[in-house]
Image (cartoon, rainbow, N blue to C red):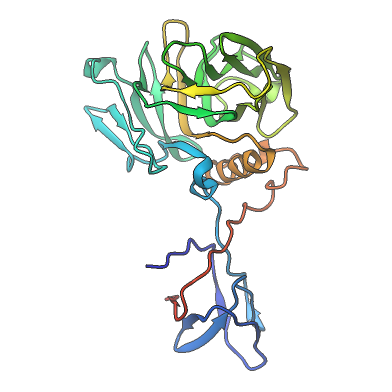
Length: 319
């Protein structure tokens, strides 16, 4: 079945004078009127209120998507007595997060309407969600983009990927005090690593949700908060050194404190175009648009997905 994720379409009236282009035989049906749409889904009607378009989400990163975890609702979570047992991977790669050795009382809480009306997982003790024993995922680029919210005076982690022996690792975490905070990227490749961090900023204060992105691009460790200024440093590892993923983890360990995680995307690419699209997708979904800088490409509009070719005769019905 041909499937399209559509942005809002509001048709006020169909009148004479319709201008359209037709290519792939896509047919739009509204109140009995049949309209042919082009491959770029352009249809100019005298009284169309908004255009037909596709909303980008992380699945549009294709083979660049390693894993995708979403706690905005309970749809992708298994919860027992208010505690999270499993976080399902939305990428289709089957990298579901669980920690079966922990008692129910030691597992993280789920809080509804925690971040701008959406849910989040609360890591309140030394607990977490993790997946280990992943068959080698070898890449020369790796990136984590997460929506998270920390607590005062602590350094909560919002995502970590690593190799089994710990020689490769990438972690995003927040440092904060009562008035400001900063995002940190901690990377290690072939046991050679470095840390880099954004400047302390009052906009990154505690108990305020943020979008943090950190990445390894084959030579440098880099990161930024809310789509802002990039902070980077050379890892010291040979350029193009392979980064191997065998473990994915969220939440607290022995040295990380309480925090909320809303959604996280893990990629094996680190190009800025994709990172900006993930940031835009998360900002629009989680109500964080005002945190993005004015010149961010998705501050005022959602990223659009490429429109796939449709089989001839495809019918889209709008009721």
